[in-house]
Amino acid sequence: MNKFKPYFAVIFTSTNNDSIEGYYEMAKKMESLAKSQKGFLGIDSARNELGITVSYWESLDDIKNWKLNSEHQFAQKFGKEKWYSWYNVRICRVEREYDFNK
Image 1 (cartoon, rainbow, N blue to C red):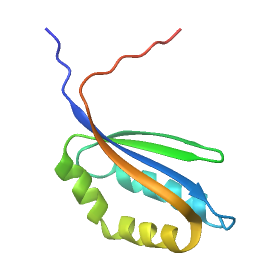
Image 2 (cartoon, rainbow, N blue to C red; image 1 turned 60 degrees about the horizontal axis):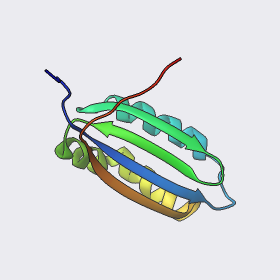
Image 3 (cartoon, rainbow, N blue to C red; image 1 turned 180 degrees about the vertical axis):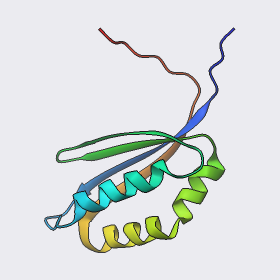
Image 4 (cartoon, rainbow, N blue to C red; image 1 turned 45 degrees about the horizontal axis):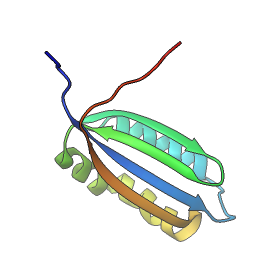
């Protein structure tokens, strides 16, 4: 019997403008804060010309609560004003997963 429980992924894709002062410090702070939130399951992130951060959550309510977190809202506002030239957010339900590890 498969005991996999579906969960949710928030996929944040972005491009930065030329001003990234303080960006990486804020990203670390937000990751640490997210880890303390109810329903947080994990995070994957990569950044070059295009940044992709995927956070994993138990429920849509947990995602909503993270979006409404006051410190997270401050970081979102600051990002729009200072760091991002573009971003996109996708919220997906993960029905199954598998991996390979050598």
